[in-house]
Image 1 (tube, rainbow, N blue to C red):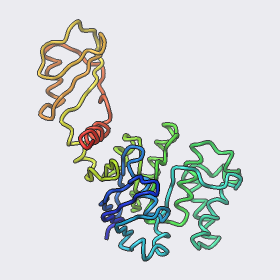
Image 2: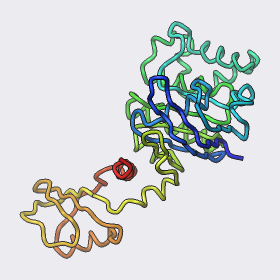
Image 3: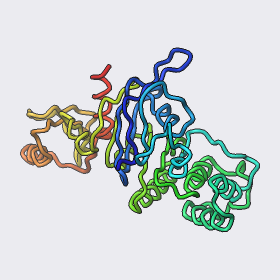
Length: 303
């Protein structure tokens, strides 16, 4: 049984905007799935339909084998949603927000308190539990949204841009927390603009462009579609000119060069070239995120 199965999903808004054009998508149970695309590509519309916040025009959506049209009242307890916007009462206390959310799902008070305390501690919000939500920083509010989505113990967690506006250190902490949830068996669907985030977290990735899924495969297969890679090398000593090479090499400055290599070349080939020409390397790095390169290439082809 799939955690999520979407068949021929279509949505046109009243203003005439066509958001989805026959989307087909499957997510396996236990997967960490990334749905990536530009603003307006259709990501949030898909999430809105899954969670019964947006009405579809056509198509079928099954969550753990149950139709959202026929059994949403049974499905909703299995879904946790973290929307883009903060939508809790800012004057409520942090712990009360979680306990009240659990109450909406019929969870007894004592069990709700235990679940709330568990996630407040896991997400480093315990010391803020008796403070009003309005006093929290942006990063803390993001973590509160995640904690709130988990208090009823959903099997499927959907995160719509969960780390937007969060600094790098806090983002990494949230990534580790989400990976742990996934390793415990929870299915996670993530939409994100941070392609580094998708590459770090996700096992499988769907790319959506203008309301259509243009790629749906494993992360490994996706990045393997790249025809070439670019690396930046910092040199120990300046070089006056670049020796002849089968690689594409651009001089950035006296002690930095950019090397573009095709699939048939390896890192060993590059270092053999450096050794032959007595070029000493201080450090190296990928010029850009590999998933980002693949994403941009696919979008360019589709457009």
